[in-house]
Length: 195
Ligand code: HEM
Ligand code: HEM
Image 1 (tube, rainbow, N blue to C red):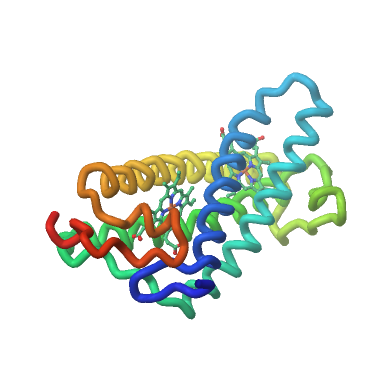
Image 2: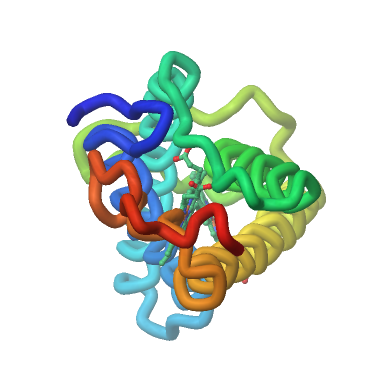
């Protein structure tokens, strides 16, 4: 139940997926919303929350990859065309990459900023800056990279969600249900190999 099998996602992968999916979507919304705030105290607090959640995502991403490297992955339906299998693997790899690259480029933004604002992790301790040169120009460059990658990642997430819905409603296979019910190895009468 805890571990994946050749046919099902276990509880650990299930929790990693859904907790990080929720964190990622909240994080994207906060990043988009916080910049336009007029109330400076609320803006400061949201920036700190954005940074804290970003580091939480980074830490979870490290644990998730370690877990994934030692785990089975449920095989895709045999009837799925090879090119779709490769697209699915490629897009999962890019989603994993985004969970590392976004926090790291965000960290670069605050590390290069001439504004001396500390990064508090949920108000508990200060996270040091990366050893990067401080200048307005570098901050602007990293901000553009961070923003560009964030919008790229949310586009990929949208495609990912549409693909999951397409499998469920159009192909009527068990790919989505397996991620919704940990331990579920597929229906016996599944149309999985008929589409
Ligand atoms: C998965 C993690 C993250 C996601 C999805 C994310 C997403 C975003 C988004 C969508 C924006 C707005 C971009 C725009 O409209 O141009 C943004 C801005 C920003 N992010 Fe992140 N971010 C993440 C992690 C981090 C981390 C870890 C930090 C810092 C330690 C950070 C620092 C910032 C800063 C400072 C800005 C505002 C830049 C400005 O004022 O223009 N982000 N982020
Ligand atoms: C409502 C939103 C979402 C739905 C319905 C969804 C659905 C799914 C499904 C059905 C799978 C299994 C695919 C397979 O077995 O081939 C999957 C895997 C995956 N999803 Fe999502 N997903 C959502 C959001 C997200 C978000 C926001 C992210 C990351 C930013 C994400 C990252 C991943 C990754 C990396 C995998 C590969 C499996 C793993 O190693 O955990 N998903 N998703």
